[in-house]
Length: 492
Ligand code: BES
Ligand code: ZN
Ligand code: ZN
Image 1 (cartoon, helix red, strand yellow):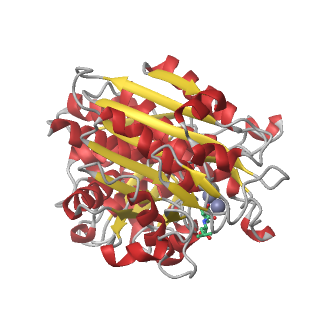
Image 2 (cartoon, rainbow, N blue to C red):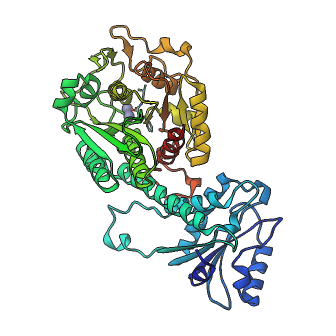
Image 3 (cartoon, rainbow, N blue to C red):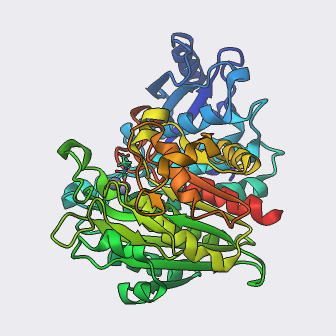
C-alpha cells in the first residue's frame, strides 16, 4: 500500500476522463518525457467509457494501460466493476507480471475509496479466473499477472483500504470457486462429489457439514428428492452446512441451493441443444456452498445454515414419470406434469427440512426456469417473494454486491396455475406463460410458514455474458449477494 512499492511494478493502470483529464497519482513519479507521451496518447483517444490503449513508456520502458472512465459524473460502481475487469484483461494481454494501480485515481462523487478498494480487488480476482482444469499442462501453466500492487494517495486511510482489498479478494476467490464447481463436467461433479467438496470447504474455512444419504432421506420422507433421483445411477445426497459466527442460539438465516448435478430433463428429455450447459444446474448449490465458505473465511458475526439437495436428473427404466404423484416431506403430494421441472421438486423437501431451524430469513437459489433467461437476459437474476419489503432489500443488496437482481410478482392470482388434478400441487403448469412466476409459486406452497422467504431464479445469470469481461462459462452468480445479505441481515 505504498507508492514506492507500486512504482516497482512492471506495468500500470492509468485512468482518464473527459473533464478531469489525466490525474493519476503515479504521474508525479514519471519522467517528463513519459508524462508527455501518456498525455499525447490520451489526447488522440475517443474518450468513450472503457476506450483503452496499451502503451510502452519511452523512457522507463514500463507498460501502461490507459483507460477512459467516461465523464466523472457518470462514474458509478456499476461502471467501476466493468472497468477493473477490462483493465485487468488488457494488462494481461501486455504480458505484464505485476501491475501497479492507485485506488485513489478511481474515487468519484458516487464512489468512495473503500468501495473502490473492495471492488478493484474483487473484480480483478473475477477477471483473472479461467477454468483450465481440463486443458493440457502447457496451457495451464501459461504466464499471467502474478502480483497486483495497490496504492493510495497520501492522507488516505491506508489500513481501511487494505482491509477492503483483502475482503474483496476473499469474496472474489469464493465466487471463482463456485464457478469451478459449476464448470466441472457432470460426470465428474456428481451428487457425492458435490457433497465431498462441501465437506472440504467446511474443514478449510470452519463450518460444520453433514451429508444425508438416500436411506436417511427415506426415513425423513423426502419423496421429492428421491423421486427425481430414481432415474440416475448416482446416489442423491442432501448437504447440510452450519456456520456459527455468533451465538448458536440465535435464529439462523437459511440458504437453500438447487444441486441438480446434471439435468437431462429426465423422461421429458431436453432437446439436444438445451442440454450441454446442464452440468451447471447445480449453480444454486455451488453459490450456497461458496457463500458459506466466504462467510466463514471472513468470520462474519452470523449464524447461517446452508442446505443443498444434490441429485442427477436422468431418463431410465427407473425414472419418475410424467403423471406420477410423489409424496413430499411436508405430506403434500406433487403431481408430475413434466420431469424437466425437477428443481422445484427437490427444493420442496429442502424447504420443509428448513422449518426445524425457525429461520429469521430463508432464501433459495436455483437455476429454475428457462423463462427467466427470456425475461431478464443475462444481466439480472429474478427475485420473487410474498414479502415486498424483503424483495426490495434483496434488490438493493444486489446493487451493492454486484449480483444485480430484479423483482417479479408473486401474486395470489398465479396460484391456480399450479393446482394439481390428482395430486395437491402440479410441478409445471400446462401453458408456457409466466414460467418463472409459476416456479416460484410452486415453491411458495412449501414456504408458507416462513416470515421472510424469497426465491432467487439464477437461470438468467448462470453463465457469463460476452460484455461482462469475464471468461466464458459459469459466472458464480449469487455468492456476492448471499455474502452481503448474511452481513446485513445479521446486523438487524
Ligand atoms: N434447469 C432448467 C432451467 C434452466 C434453463 C436453467 C436454462 C438454466 C438455463 C430447469 O430444470 C428446467 O428445465 N425448467 C423447465 C421448466 C418447465 C418444464 C416448466 C423450463 O424452464 O423449460
Ligand atoms: Zn429441468
Ligand atoms: Zn434443472
